[in-house]
Image (cartoon, rainbow, N blue to C red; front, side):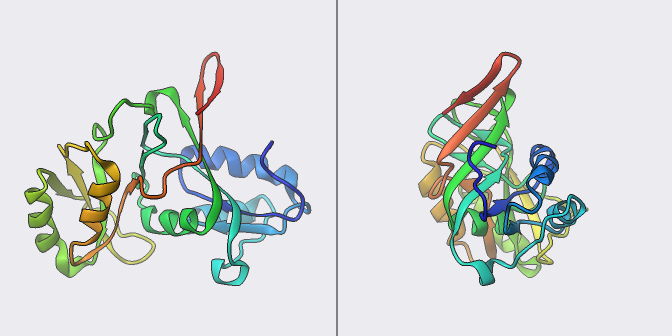
Length: 203
């Protein structure tokens, strides 16, 4: 826990990798002020290890946010949202001075796009957004079984050519009905920790 310090409020993401991090945070119970969570599931897990979950509105800027990713490049651009928490993850990342992303080596890719890009949408705009995403060269697929913690739906966009992740992120975010897109390039990770059988590489 090299990046933690006593009295800190830490931002915490969502997913299987983050669950391991949350379990390890239990050893810091009583030393941390608390955590800001990106999902209902992570909040429950944080509480189960004895950490107080705080509202971002009550704590202001965060020193540290820790999360995983579905894909990452050495430029520290990410695709996130496989677990459906992309909007809250993006908010907590934006509120944090430092964003550390933890992935295993299978998630490290030369160019984003093998993993479909999640887009959280207002339900009434699903077909409208889908048509716009097709104009960007994507093939949107409605994640029918998923309702986000915000009460919205998700389109998973396959076949996108992501030559400029930051510009594509801006373009998709401008489509009416889009809540947010799971490209984290405008505010990517500050540090990427890549785990492998031989250890951890810091990018």
